[in-house]
Image: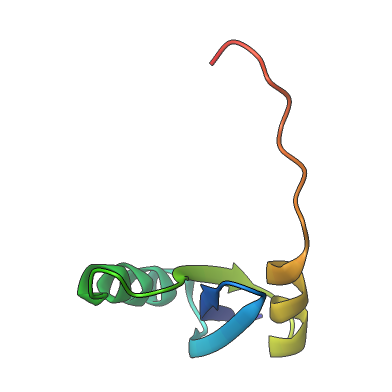
Length: 72
């Protein structure tokens, strides 16, 4: 399964930036993109592992429940 790199913008806008077969490559490119991103650019760079691009988009748009609070 591939690793996808997306820019996640407000109002559930997704922009696919890249696709890689290995995590190391995807992680390195995502870190580079985050550093190269200009100040004030809207959106966050995210890496996601999924079967297909459609499934990756679905996972990115799901609302996640916060973990239990505790001794942090």
